Image 1 (cartoon, rainbow, N blue to C red):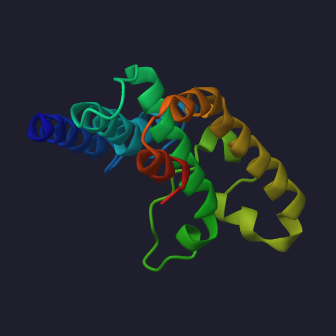
Image 2: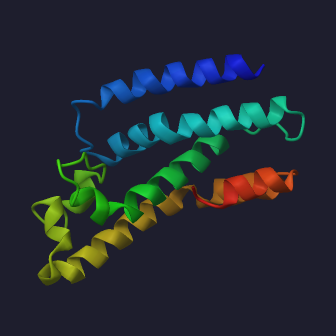
Length: 156
């Protein structure tokens, strides 16, 4: 039922997020793992809840995870400037493996003299997020309930 799905997902999310309390996002694998814990598992849980409600099919875990990863990566990309300017300094989740190809420090991307490098890095980040788009489109095309479709299609 609902409670079991929520309990399972929140336990797994908490354990996974604890891994990243002191760990930076260095590699693309780290980035995918972090996004899985904070959003992919939400996708899995929501899919189980949608199915338990009787309105939706049970989607494969990989597809539900992709939905979460795509939305989380979109948020991480969108929130760069807000996050980098936060005081006290907030955690940043852009993987070093990507941004270090363009600048020495992640905050250097906000400098006007690095605008071309910033665009190249942004393109790299967006390209990484788009890896999940095929699963997302398939997931959304298979949704039957218009309210659930709107919830999934419009980033929060």
